Image 1 (cartoon, protein in one colour):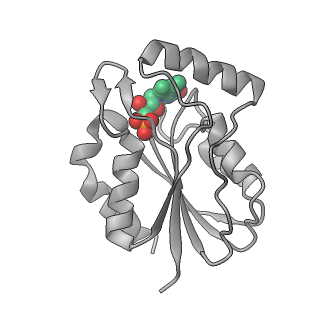
Image 2 (cartoon, rainbow, N blue to C red):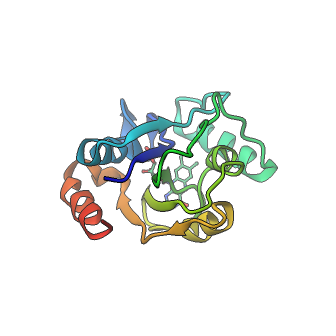
Image 3 (tube, protein in one colour):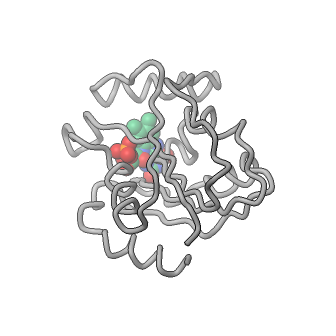
Length: 167
Ligand SMILES: Cc1cc2nc3c(=O)[nH]c(=O)nc-3n(C[C@H](O)[C@H](O)[C@H](O)COP(=O)(O)O)c2cc1C
């Protein structure tokens, strides 16, 4: 079996119209994938955590996006032993949050199979597949999975179907 890992970002705390979450939506999906595939899981953490309240977080995320300034706590490290890499992200203004770009942009993607998954509230995959095609040079970007964030707890079977289909 090919070795795989999951690189993702997810934010807990207050989210739009659902109150405070203990675990972010994308993290729920990342853990489904880990349980179903046995992949190693790597969570991207911002160097400066976001505010817990939704409205301040939106402002902070916008600033980081516009300025392309989103340092992360710890680099991903060596991915050479993984042939399949699941990349998980919430959709922020149609794309990945800037910290995902920081985490992914300097890795060696040659020959990797990339399987994107996102959670969103209406945008679907947005421009994330295109964004990944430009960041993950010489990787094969497979069809992505887009799930509505507020529904993830009832969508495990969709994750299973996607993993089966993309095998
Ligand atoms: C800063 C910010 C920007 C967002 N922009 C979008 C967007 O453009 N399109 C969309 O469908 N959802 C958008 N959302 C909703 C998130 O994508 C959605 O709630 C997602 O499930 C959050 O994932 P997480 O809990 O793993 O962080 C945004 C949320 C935040 C906090």
